[in-house]
Image: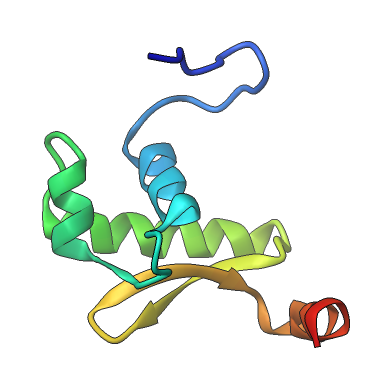
Length: 94
């Protein structure tokens, strides 16, 4: 199995970064991941903690003016472009 590269970033491997990676990767069908699914993939993290971590990540994304957000879709979550960046996506993909 491949080792997780730690020398390429200062990202600490913790619940927040693991959650972020899971949402970035998503599912092969691009279906939203539910809090229950995400908590099941993360050791020692409850469903309520997943929701709290997502809220914290979104606050950080907005504060850093990141082009992406985590959006609630149905009963799950998915990474998406922030609204201001949607015209760029349309320009690239029509």
